[in-house]
Length: 334
Image (cartoon, rainbow, N blue to C red):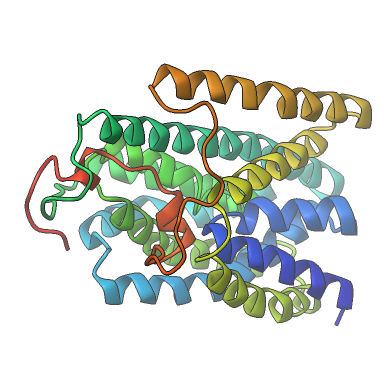
């Protein structure tokens, strides 16, 4: 067992517990950039770790009834075989150094998309908050929502997400949920997170099986990560009721961007310049967007009062609200 790997897994687990995201998006680049693990081995071990962690959260959402099982089924039709296919594509691209470089590049691109997805989710959440404040949406849901599955586009989303997850381990909790926002804009935040988490379980298991058979799975590496990740996820979930949303979200976005730049081969100077520009310019842009929506330029870091009921999970708090979250339609929630 490698103690440093266990410690790294512990801190990554805390982030996953806090945000519901960042498993593959953080774990794999940490292994590649800080521990020198070959990209394919990092992806393989990360997927096996995720296959152990994700069912825990999925069971919680299933018990709460915040899962659209029909949509889960259609996503899995595309994602399960394509996740396995993603592993085979990685293997077919080359041997030794070639496949490692391709995997590293694909991971960098996936992290850039995940970073953009985080910003997009935050923007949608801000717009929804502005509409509630302006009285265009009621503040509380008026009833449950009926969501009709769209089989063909849902299968396509699952297939694309499956290939990306199989090749990079990124996307089961970040890229797919962004696509679901477009397909099902009326879906409540809790249903969005619950559905995404449950569909991610067979998706990640399929990808993990492919990497065990054809990837570069290393049992010692995986066990070291699991020893840290499991208590980290539990602690992060406990802290999620108290940690300020804005700080966690900004930190995760910053880390994903930095990891993507390094994986894509950016020099240290270029990485520092881009990150410095992001630190200076993004808050200014965000303040301008908030004022355009009629909101104060700066949001409160600690919006929940002491004793107020916290959200069921950090994922629920992070997911953007939609018109359905505020009762635009009524019907039956699964």
